[in-house]
Image 1 (cartoon, rainbow, N blue to C red):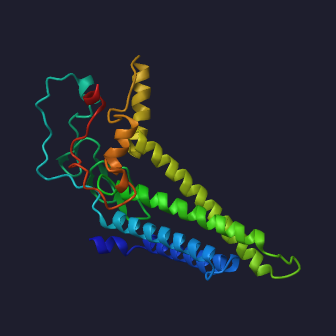
Image 2: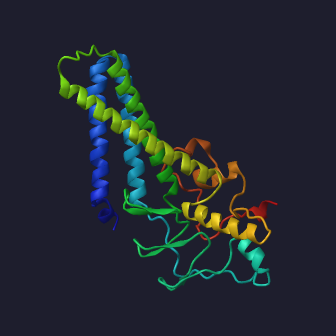
Image 3: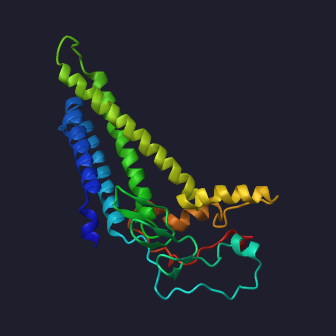
Length: 276
């Protein structure tokens, strides 16, 4: 199943894009700028190669990891049935049943129409990794976006620096100018897109939200305001703890996409009530 996920056109397109950007950045622009044999050229090539490797590794973890499957034996805890409906909704433990899978869904789990099953702490289904982004691969996904953003910005800076130091002869070499402009426009657009996406997931990470929960929260806040109440995302337990719940308590392992030993079963999560 893992190998089938890799054999898809979107993932193949990502590999082609990454290979193209890597080749042009290292063997065209760095070589043209200072040369790969020089110390600055070798250092920039080394840094960019390391970023490309981290992107590939994060991509592999995203694709090959199961985002989180609901255990067949999962049964909701109904011992707190005497709790009021409002309190039940606030602590995120209300009974949720999936009619398609014919199972109970744990808190934060959702049914994916593409994967045709429920996914623990589902964020979204990503076309570019041919997989859901969920409980077990969300950290790797964030790292993928982070490394891809840094790599895109690095490539853009190298391109601009190389272009500025060239002695342009505007009377000829039109194909070279077109190539510089086209590649530059592509890298700026890619950097802005990835940077915006990274900023979005940093926001979600610091609020301990998924993309689905964000849009559900908008509706919940509107309904709460309509009834004269206030709404607070139940899984928001503070910025630092929100971060450690996803990236882990050890800051030295935050940037390692495969370091997920700190993650629990994905069935239950701490809620803000637990910290009050």
